[in-house]
Length: 370
Image (cartoon, rainbow, N blue to C red):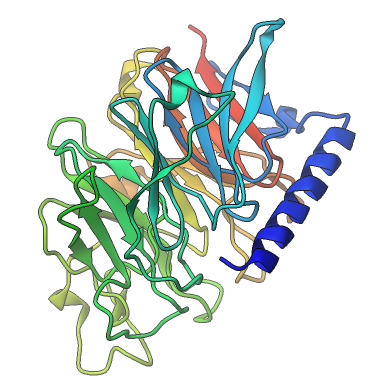
């Protein structure tokens, strides 16, 4: 990254932090509609451009960002028991959206490399210099930001989005989900034909990988759908750039192809909702009916006449997933204007659900009271 780019990122960081400090009102969470028995509250505020989340072994919430190049650690404030303390543990990075935790170390994604901060929870006030785990990823910024997570196999999964709206690249790494061992070795492509996945998780029982995928733009307000997909094994192809959803052949690249050639989506999500982070619910606080259901953060549309998304949706992966797709929480969009944009979801040890919001610079906590 050039010195000029780093300067601009840091300048933007200072500007946003200054703006956040000037705010006096918390996000208007009273506008959020939830099912009966659920409530939402602000878990942490002034977390500029909050994106991907992960938990450390000692309960630290780590949060990445996209536009500011910053990674945060959120901990209890010892001086204010009901408040959280937000620490900046890294800055000046290139779109560090993804964070993952393993064996005491925090893994952070940049566009072209994965970093590792060892023993991070012991050194939150004085973070160590990161080790470069792997720096062989493409450098293209378009869809270059990466959600990352460790799978049940112990490998780190890393998506590489298409470097375009829709195109066919000679570099086989684009439009894939890749994986590697924690030390950066054995980097390989796990699944193909994925335009831009910014969220995935593994089924608690089957251990299959489920992931969201953002559909292409400029096919109209209602085409194509975003997708919720399942990869039960390595080597599957989900159709991009030839096919979108389960039946839409791309008008430019789809000639000579049919959608039946490719792995079908489990759920065709609403078009342009920008489905990002997703998690299986495995806590013990929500009612039993919520066990193993998928929560999806829909960041919200930009390429649509009337905006859609800006909400949390839910899917039952084990029984008629398409019919079970419905809204769980909404209200970040009001009169076609958004005051917040959900990005990621994280199940907490107490069974509550956190939601990151990169527009309102906040983390919310959704809980259930019997």
